[in-house]
Amino acid sequence: ILDDLGRYEGAVKCYRGALEVQVRALGGNHIDVASTKDSLGVTLWRLGKYQEALVLYDDALQVREAVLGSEHVLVAKTIVNRANVFFRQGMCMRALADYSRALEIEKRTLGEEHVLVAKTKNNMGEALRIEGKFDEALQLYNESLNVLVKVLGQAHVLVANTKNNIAGIYLKQDKCEEALQYYMESLDVKLKMLGPQHSDVANTIENIGVIFAQQGKHDLALDKFGEALNIRSHALGPD
Image 1 (cartoon, rainbow, N blue to C red):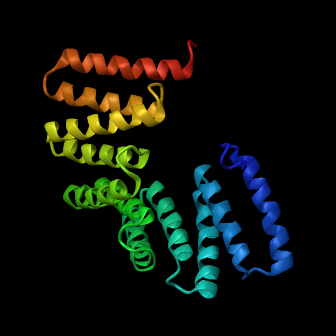
Image 2: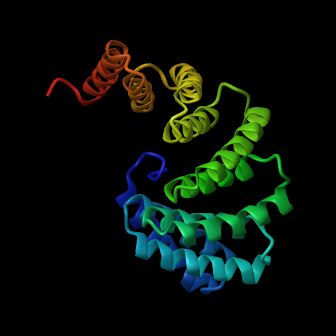
Image 3: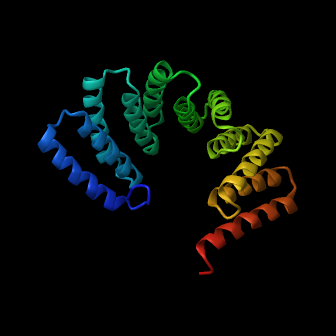
């Protein structure tokens, strides 16, 4: 609950307390201990404590593989979590190796058309984008989008975020019209699902402004930058 509320320091304290009790009662190689270590690792990752998170993920992974086998979705979950740490640390190739490993497990256990498969492909796309492999990233984003639309429908934030990612690739490739189309589609969903005062809405509006600026449509660009600024100012308050 504390995690969901964003009270991460409090959540860490609770997880550590629970972990201590579990280890004493169940031993260090119990599946419940692995689950708590995995959850604690996610919270530490959110706090930017990456090395501590990695140690916990490695511990959790070792237990989960020993108890559940290497082809279990919870094993894939921990591998994805570890990859997220590598990604945050700028170690994109190590992140890609883990994402790829997790993806194969997820496809075999859940099938190709599952949200977790789509999310892992999205994560891989992000790492490939950072590495400058835009065509590979775009392919994964599109595969992810196809699954997300089929499973969740068009009006979902994950669909909007994926369209935003696709637009970002097109922008990198100077394909402004394609980028604009996907940003506009993303914005439409975000406005409906998040409301007009959300920071993600502001980010997408700003990206649309960047495209207008690149196209020499400076008045339109200034309008969009102003819209984004107004949303952020409203979120931060008058001070």
